[in-house]
Amino acid sequence: MLKLKLIAICCSAAILLSACQDDNKDRRKPRPKANKQTTMQVSERKYSLDNLPEAKSIQVMTYNMPNVQGKTAKATAMLMFPQTPQPKDGWRVVVWGHGTVGIGDRCAPSNNALDVNFKTTAAGLLKAGYVIVAPDFEGLGTSGIHPYLNLGSASRSASYAMIAIKQLYQNQMNGAWMSVGQSQGGHAALGIAEYANDDRNYKGTVAAAPASSLDIIALGAPMVLEQLVAAGKQEVAIEGYAGLLTFAAYATVGIKAYEPQFNYKQVFEPRSGEIAAYAEGSTGEQGECLAPLYSRFSADIKDFLARNKGKTVLDYPALNKDFNQNPSVKKFLLDNQPGTKKIKSPLMIIQGTADEAIPYVITVGLKDHLIELGTALHFVPVEGASHSQAIVQKNDELLKFVQQYMPASSLKEGML
Image (cartoon, rainbow, N blue to C red; front, side, top):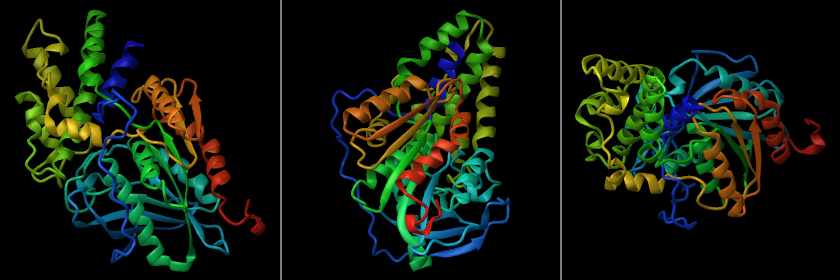
């Protein structure tokens, strides 16, 4: 249990979000709506790094969207069409939100082979007759720093991808759409749902193991690390702390996407700050992806301990003790906390009880708060499932939820 708690805290730190609100009010600034008159300048190219038998075609679409600085920027998304016949009244679309990959351009899903768990979800949706659009998210694979776990950015990446599809395929599209996401993508899906509250074409959301809270880096991590060290489980503490710092680096570097002068190294102690810089690379375009950055932090913690006998992981110079009081970090925490307002469309949340990345108890808290706000929510706990297993194990239930609220075609066509 200690291991699970530590890793959960560490990986939840990916989002650096504060769950501890002193009231239920959404005190963020009003969120900008998509300008559907925007000239998209849409283009496509064939995706050839992998294949999916259920997909008739996979393209990488390039389109315009407003970035976090309010400027027009290029964005990319994979577009998958099913083998099934086009419905008479047009295709329905499911937007897929991917999990954490990093913030460098080479980390973008469209620049890599398809994630094995995504293939399971995608196969079911394609067989059922849905078009899938999978945004890379702003700054991944295109110019600019990826604003990691920025609700507004992820939501615009999705909504403008939908505008682009409609422009590109016109009457082939029905207009109805839903979002499905895992981890970082679950966080994005919740944001998409909030932004789409007034969109009658938006039919619902599935968020699996959604990143949703944190200020527990400062409050909870030291306590759990101390317990692990006392129990002689230093290796577990090392790996968990490496995860915390990896995701914290992505989140703080991502702030630079809209606040270029922000010095994320001020959030870290000098030693760990030098490693966090690899998340950005020289410009944010060359930043390291998830696995190598994680390895750097893990190796450096071990080196610190080897050179400082008698020290424990608790002594490693990581985040500053008052990092969450940095004005830029505080703004990030407030602006990007999901679940602070009622979601008007149907919502399913899938969560593994043995999730090693997002604590089950955190997602239960998110669920309870959304219900209090009046959200129609179907919560699916997956007994004993890990972070990546839950969505796969409940793939059939996910598909039924999508079909219930957005049939792939009109009922009279008999596709269901």
